[in-house]
Image 1 (tube, rainbow, N blue to C red):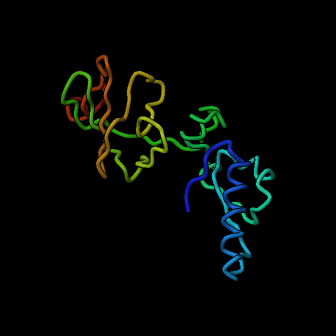
Image 2: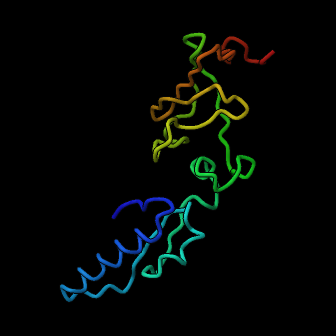
Length: 151
């Protein structure tokens, strides 16, 4: 039905209990109450109406888990290696990673990813196959076409 609010087990349990009662009042059996939400998977015991828990990204410890302080950045299972294909301005770069490899589901986060070891760079826009990195300062990136040996 919806994504559950983080750290609101009592509210989730109340909502689901009320929904279950309303459905059962119409003589419809509710055998399974399925819930999910990786950040709260360790609090599932606080939602006793649930009979099933579907966990999403917790196994990968993605950026959303880092942002919610569920894990640290060094525990993230996967990063994406992208190539800078264009530097149209001093503070903007285009990479060959877009929504097909980076997330378009922001869930309250401001940007579409992080550039490891470069906290001043932000991935602010995606097309299917390209991403836009911006910075308040120079990015200091060079196009691979300008310097294919990266020398």
